[in-house]
Amino acid sequence: MAKLAKAEGLTGLRKAAILMISLDVDSSAKLMANLSTDEVERVSMEIAKLDDEIPAEIRDAVLREFYQTHLASKYVEQGGIEFARQLLEKSLSPEEAAKILAQLENTIQLAPFHFLKQVDSEHLLMYISDEHPQTISLIMAHLPPKQAAEILVGLPAKKQLEVVKRICRMEQTTPEAIRMVEQGLESRLASLVTQSLESAGGVQAVAEMLNLCDRTTEKGILENLEEADPDMVEQIRKLMFVFEDIILVNDKGIQSVLREVENDELATALKTASEAMQEKIFKNMSTRAAEIIRENMEFMGPVRLADVEQAQQHIVDIVRRLEESGDVIISGRGGDDNVVV
Image (cartoon, rainbow, N blue to C red):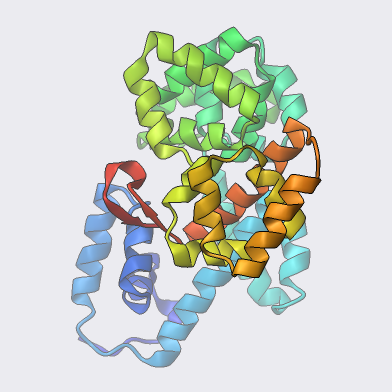
């Protein structure tokens, strides 16, 4: 087999294979988990073909391209293609920025409902709120969790329940069904979906949405849904992460979280926490620091519930971020005894 040439001459499949073997095992496994069965098979076969030593400059080029493309996709989500171009050109040459964005635009054009990701949630809610729950659930299942959560919060309670139930039960949707809904949005239609089945929805999607909703919405949906389908609610709860679940975080993870939380905010968050939860936090602090937090809690007086929930949500957001980076271990997450996330 010939030696590998420049990175520019590699196929997307070959780059994916090189990326997988260049990362550590845990990171590669996380990426593989986002691929379809067919994609996993094709990447695995390509990895098997890499029987020559890959030059360090090729590995570096592939890793750099992956990072830059990932960064560009974040910029696009924040402000669109032009916004991403402006930011990328500050760190890359115009040619490199244009190449990355061209690759990204090709991917975006194939994504169902991609044009709705740049639409203000309030306007989108006004546009689809009167649609049938099945139509709303299909649209929401293809939106980023944060945007879907904003839509969910704005729906009437009865429709919230209907939409959540349909998303939970959704597995695969034909391109024709997606196309019909896209065409129903007329002026916002940007492209047609591919001819392969699009996987979206499911219990995981609902858990991500509810994690981003306010507590009142989350509680109302789960309580109403539990009356109709308690098994479904149990599945959702297992996938959700709330403030009291921090008690399941390993001690090293707790210490990482505490380094990013101010004393006043921590004292506020612990106001309604269980005794076990408080002890979990205090044992991962110095004796003096724990005393300061206890004193703050004692002398701060009455605190609005909304302020407590806001402080707790900020800490949960920190845990989720560390969870994604692999800096936190949570016991019993998703039914396993020990899950590294």
